[in-house]
Image 1: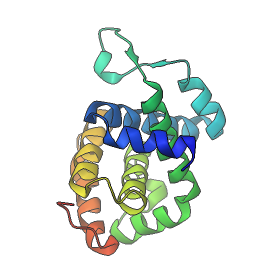
Image 2: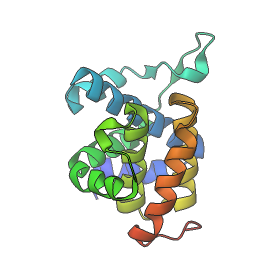
Image 3: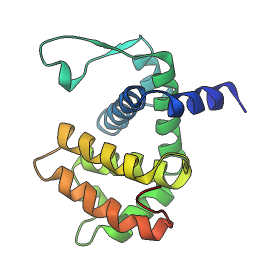
Image 4: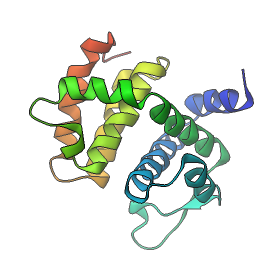
Length: 166
């Protein structure tokens, strides 16, 4: 196992807060990539200054990103990008009356992260992935984002052969 792989495994076994932080960082990186057309290395470098602004830190507090969370965020980012074509295809199949490019940027990228975890990180329980995706969508998306993301991911579970409780 590579050093990055070992650290990513350690994050998956660590407290939920680090995984949540990693997912939030990965979402912010995907968002920045799409809006700013930045390359993944540049995105990770920006986050590698050991802190990032969080929407929950509205009072101006800064959350400090642990190295482990950053490693898992990088795993999520790179995995989502490497597998984006197949991930987008799966999302398109479930998103009735929605074309991927017409979805809000946040919703689209929350879905990409969640589908990556559901498909390529089988040791992460599906219920955790879906709950985390819904929370990210509610936090960073529109008023309808949580329900929208939930509906698509719920429909995707059967396609991916995942049990919601595993």
